[in-house]
Length: 229
Image 1 (cartoon, rainbow, N blue to C red):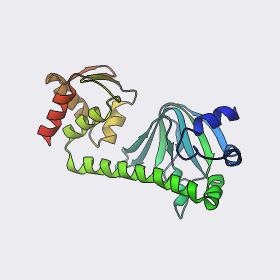
Image 2: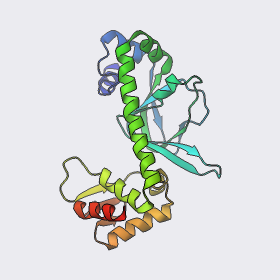
Image 3: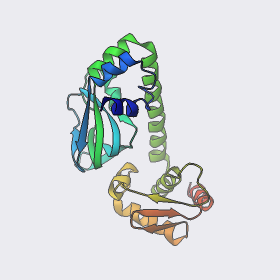
Image 4: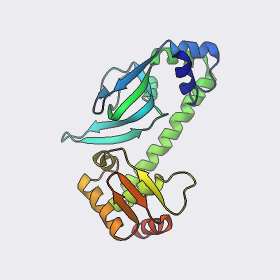
């Protein structure tokens, strides 16, 4: 079991160059978790003692609006960590809530052990800060999209950004994430999200069959984005 955990964690930038002694210390604070769809890992304001590595499934990080609606901040995919930035907060409390979108398997990692290692290793600090910087850059791009793009542009951008690497002029997307979660991530209402997909389908740019979206012409979809901009 420890070898399996080591093999999975060592693929992540934060753990990739740990020596055997450091990895053994980390493994002492790792616990496997299974969370059913809709189950919570933590809520906004809870005391933060752990961060997480997602093995399988999908986790949404969200805040509640004044009206009680969930606003999705980020959707976590397998192979990603989350909540590690809380280690640098003066008050160790989670700034968001975390809920499983799908049945999920995770590793829960003790922050106190990693904080101790950070205090001993400048290299480990730099790797963690590098990863946080990439996340911050992504967050800035998200803010730009939410403030500078209209709803149609955000949906088209999602379709384009979801393209598999090295895809041809068309590709299929299998969306396991519920549409209401995707809509919240884009700051549009679910009915607006569906209506935009229908408009793009009528224009012959995409085809929607259940949870499968086929992008029929990437170049035409990009032109639609440029025209909408």
